[in-house]
Image 1 (tube, helix red, strand yellow):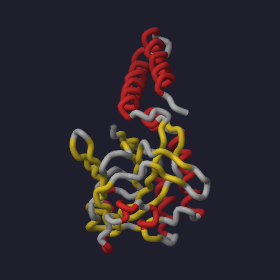
Image 2 (cartoon, rainbow, N blue to C red):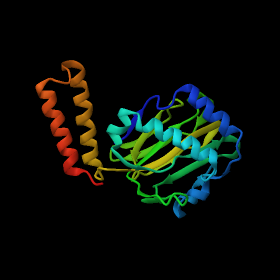
Image 3 (cartoon, helix red, strand yellow):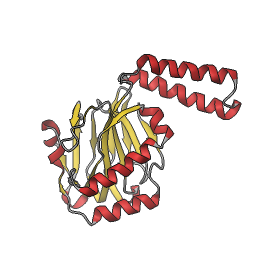
Image 4 (cartoon, helix red, strand yellow):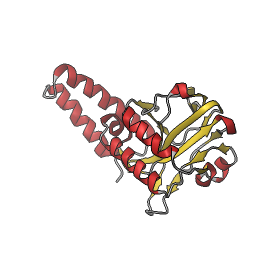
Length: 229
């Protein structure tokens, strides 16, 4: 399941993020890559343990936990502290095909999560750079994702994916992982589809419509059946 979330951050927030990030020192992005990923990764990142990275990451988490579409799609249990990267054309930055580590640990907090979902939050407008598409492979083929600044894409961490070479400008983004309360991605996808349908019915019939109430009960009972906490 690939889900796009529009406007997770407003344009003013994105501009503030970029102003602070542009003034900070960056490091080699391979420092947070696994053994296989490090062989195909060429980019830069904000030091994950820097005060700026943690402060901006907390702002992203606050936006996530206030976003109904994100909560519906992810049903998050734990969210890994967001990281930040950039791909510059002058250095030929790219990230070859890879799969994310199954488990991520944060040595500052001791947090360890199973990576059920990966997320990329775009912090540069599409016309700021050429290339830099996030390409995600699933059972239905390859999907190229290049969203407006402030938009986020959520996808299974088990997916093979890559970032194509940036040939002009600079691609800036935040990336992170999360552990869902519903481990099975097919169950999670059905729950999301059901919740989306219920919300459309609420708009048409109202929240107190008997059939809407019944479907809402089914939704919560399915979560109760599948949830792991």
